[in-house]
Image (cartoon, rainbow, N blue to C red; front, side):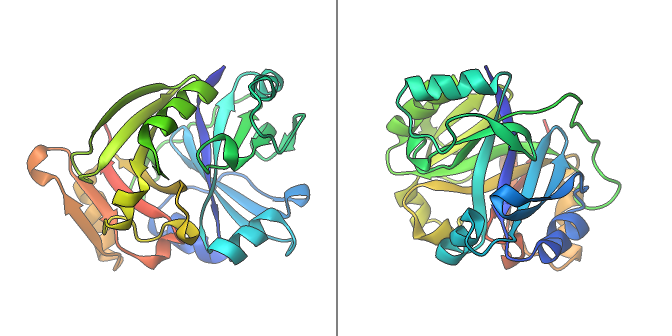
Length: 277
């Protein structure tokens, strides 16, 4: 029923300012843009291969995204899980007594959608979406970092085992771990939802780690970062360095290096780069 992650949404105060980084510096293409009146946002979808990053600027000061920004500041707002049957997915969630925001499907930018309450998934606001017809796949752009996909989505939690069980139960995910993350040097559980990967890390380890530049609003659980896979790792690092964006690279000796973007220009997202497989 669940085929992977459709997109990750980032709440920003000013969409045009966020595009300066995500479009102009990273080189991500801009797909659809729209004002979604019932959600009180102006949105832009930026394809990353078959994945997408959604930037959300509030248009309604009383709306959910505006309240999020007021309380927590800029950062990752929600994760969208793709399904082949949104009505069945919501019915399954309701039968499992998961707290729902939407009792029935409605139209959204990602297709036919419905939101689960963050209490259903370890503090992560999850949107379920059944997209319309047509492929979202986009080749890497000619400029920028040449991102090919979102390699993983990072979630911080208090209890690794409980979080792994939650993702497995709610989204039919396969889990691996607990194990030590070789680059971040913290305990993790890796979750596979369809074709997409989520990396769950312990919040208490994140608080002491320099790798998390901004964990939204000081929360104890929730989404905080993404890792973009790039076609040429060294070229991507050189490109960002040439743009004045500082990075910290580790794991060179392992053959699987990981770069952390050390910049406030990510708009509250802990952003990492790795080489495409």
